[in-house]
Length: 367
Picture 1 (tube, rainbow, N blue to C red):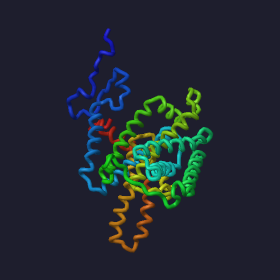
Picture 2 (picture 1 turned 60 degrees about the vertical axis):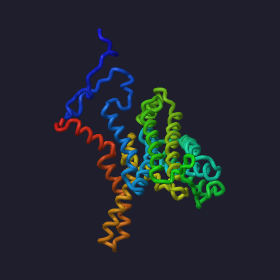
Picture 3 (picture 1 turned 90 degrees about the vertical axis):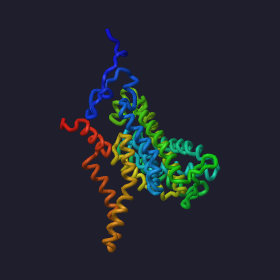
Picture 4 (picture 1 turned 90 degrees about the horizontal axis):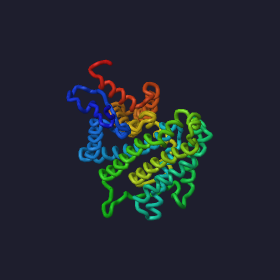
């Protein structure tokens, strides 16, 4: 009798024909089954993307690098929100305020107390996680629209505290920050800060991918799919709902701290309800319950105003009398994009990418 442990199945990696897009992928060990990227060519693609991301500043100017930095920061916050909303099913409309908690915490620790950015960054995440867990307590009794209203209340409460606690936060005047430094080297250049955000984004992606392969992540998914059945199975709803708020808020706080040091200023109006809606739009357009969707949605929503601005500037040359109308049309296009995705592609950009991959797996055949 042959032991399964000694059997090596021939799969896609042993096929030499370059036109074969898909074939058997057999696994004989739990380690292979639990691997994030179990196929060699997928590992090569991911490594190639990572290399391209690190080489990107060598091929772009400072303006484009700045946009890429904003996309990386937004991706970190969108992944955090998707952990809560897409994977655990808990709606939150207070993301803007939690970004503010992270930004102001880092500003107070670095500008007021004189601590290093490298100490302030994780502390900002932990403080935001604590605030998020506090406002996540009502999630045990509230669902759906009622929970959304509770998180909306958190948005206004946190911004009220930030605006009125002038002795600590500077009130409506805000606070000025400095870029982080490593010894005598300051991350003032666009490319250096881009690398910082990119590295943190990579760590965030790896953590999120592993989270949902763990007991905690599977509990989050069970709570999302059917919380009553999850409780019958022995999952403590209170613990895991609050934990999802805490983990989500941690990454949102990290994104808020990175954004604060990138813009070098924090002010209450930078964390309005509009910001919360933009982050919800990121995970809706990108795809709920998808790490890739969070990144694609963050890139899409971050770059959409830029693209629309270029289009409006081009049209304004030929229609100068309609400049105000074109500016209003830019806001209309932003809302229309969200509605169109919800109607025609509720799975988001991640589902569209999945459909494209599935098409080419069997190409040129139709089945």
